[in-house]
Image 1: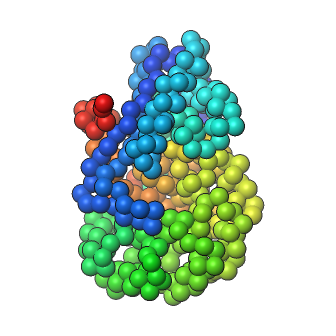
Image 2 (image 1 turned 90 degrees about the vertical axis):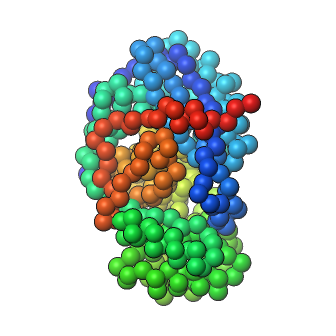
Length: 366
């Protein structure tokens, strides 16, 4: 286990001179469908910090809608003076903002603002030290198993996307399910299973779209596919419902991308609300991500990541119980591609090279 972190690097104190955020809109090759709805473009949020020491740090996170991105921007504008003229560590600045947010900062817009600040400040520290985030945290890089995601679509379209991802080097695929009927879910999954070789692992994601009873019914119908996991079938906040589904199925139940604190994740593990946990740094920040990973390790629960593959590849080095890295090319305009080889990603050993032109080009103005 390599949870001991480089305290010297984490103790770097910065005085924040500028903290700002802007909404981004990133075009997609085609609309992205899931049980949640359809995205015609990606709403994202760019957060930037500049320190008195002349160090700049960036973070880009996915947000569910343009309206929520605008709300985070407003929170940042309202809170940036709270950082004052004081030097603090990355975690210290983020903790202050969470404290100022009080009970309203436990999840949603406020938590996203604090996490985005923390990510940007850790990234500034990474740039200052000329170390990758993993090295900054004292973690050993290692190859990580990854998978490609497939949005909902017509069966032929789903199969084509599966074949494209396998051709690109993926050895595991995750399908967005939650169609109107279980028969449609089975049809999509069976078509992909037939189209790719048997060594390609399959997962499914229902994006919180089912009742507990329906999740159990569909989960049992899909057990014959020997899935790696069934993800978030019921609303994320319903830990008891998750536990009921998990206890009823032989398939691994994956959840966590919509949980907002290490405490909530530890509670979910305690309630057996998941067999594996998925962590999102855009919601947790980095310190809570590491705390949640440690809680999962202690309970022998595998840890996988949600989005932000350039960053999560670094953070997944924090646990020997690393599960899977969620691969996506959504961050490619800003940080370049995350290469996949034979189903694995090797974390970069260098700080992120941000594309400043792309950060400006996709900014929503007006």
